[in-house]
Length: 247
Image 1 (cartoon, helix red, strand yellow):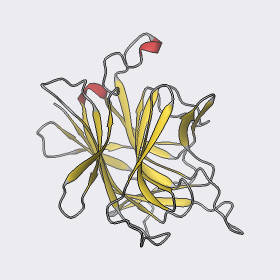
Image 2 (tube, helix red, strand yellow):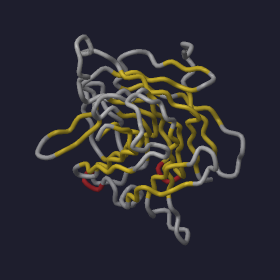
Image 3 (cartoon, one colour):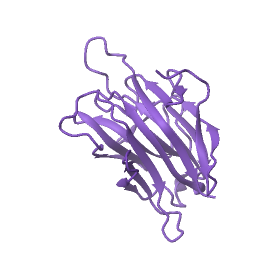
């Protein structure tokens, strides 16, 4: 069981410097104090929390989130290993990137965002990614090691990495989502998002976005089935969360 502590930080690596600097994580929509230990950070969420945007008017960000601000122009990658007892439709947790203001405590949010991690759907955990430019879209990819013999509630750690693709020195290239093999470290691309690093992002406010909030989140949009489970919280464990920046 994770030990309670006030030290909620993320190591940030800059350029070729192999020694990271610890940055504090700011809480948003936190219902219960997150806990941390040498094993990582645990965030809990009650039901009816989400990060989602869908026409004609749905725009919600009530998901408990811990994040830190970095310069958008310097962002290179972020990575984390996620695990939980996924058992209710749309249970989820992973990385969240916000261009513009992070979510307000009232659940309001403006600007663009990307979330990627584990999402429980079709009776098993998947690698779920949603990207909200104007409206959000959603995609699912298989989780390594999850097959037809998956037992509901099995905790299977999954490592997710998002990385800026730089082509010929062009830092406006795509953001890639990778699933990482925990044994070999080999990455497999599961999603390409092309608009995140464009200089005209945020043009609707008359200026480009210069900051990126990078963090970890969890959400439980659906109420669990079963007597007495109406308020049951989902706890998600995050291990080896790190951020890397360019010089």
